[in-house]
Structure formats: C-alpha cells, structure tokens
Length: 138
Picture 1 (cartoon, rainbow, N blue to C red):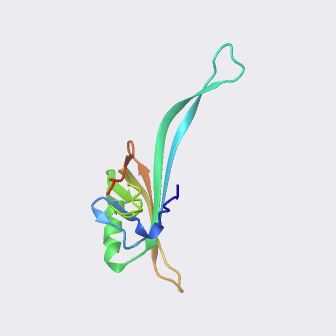
Picture 2: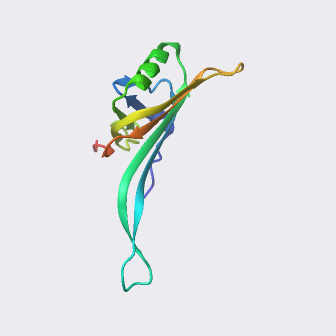
Picture 3: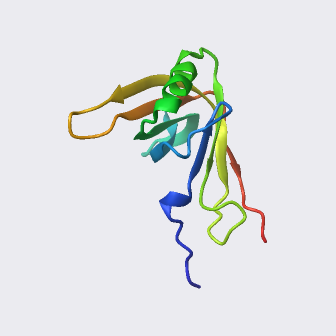
C-alpha cells in the first residue's frame, strides 16, 4: 500500500484565537512520559510502570509587523492557551488530523540580524492532556 506523505507547508497553527499560519515556519511537538521503576521480589529484572506525561511545543517563523502585538499578548497571558495544529490539508488527501490542547507560553524570542528578516520563536509547555482528532474520511 502506498504512503501519502504530508508536506509541511500545509500545516496550520492556532494559539489562543490567533492564526499564526502565515508567520509560522517550523513547529515541533514533543510528547513524553516518565517511566517509574517498580522493583519486585522474586525477579531478577525490575518492572516499569508508566508515570506522568508531559508535552511541549516549539514554534518559530518570520516576524510580520502586524503580528508583533499578537505574539506579545500571547506571551503576556498567564493562563494556559488553547492551541491546534492541523497536520496536512484539512479534508484533503494529506489530512493527518489535528493535534490540540492547552499550553502556557514559557518563552518568546524575537531576533534579527543585519542581513535577514526579524524572526520569532516560542516554547509552549502543555497544561493537561493533549488531544488528537482523526481526519474525517472524504
């Protein structure tokens, strides 16, 4: 069976109520779970049980003048923000579903050099369990 690979340029990202798709360039999602050792009598090797999960997301892109205030306001928000990332084209042949959840923006960096455009990057730390919404078959 052939695989349908998902091109990154179809990604859409929303943080809070703000669509950052046009200024986004890279999104990286990491979902981890701790492993708790569980030594038991009568066995040579210990067992392991699942611990708490944690996830984070890094986003970066080029900075547009119209979006500086948007990013600043997102960083100034103390509460967890809802977020979604569309994996592929919604409803299209490359639709991979939607990742989502709530997260706190723990870092916002804006930088420039003399030869390039301003860029931005942000780190979000998950608040609660993330979600995955499977694509709807056409």
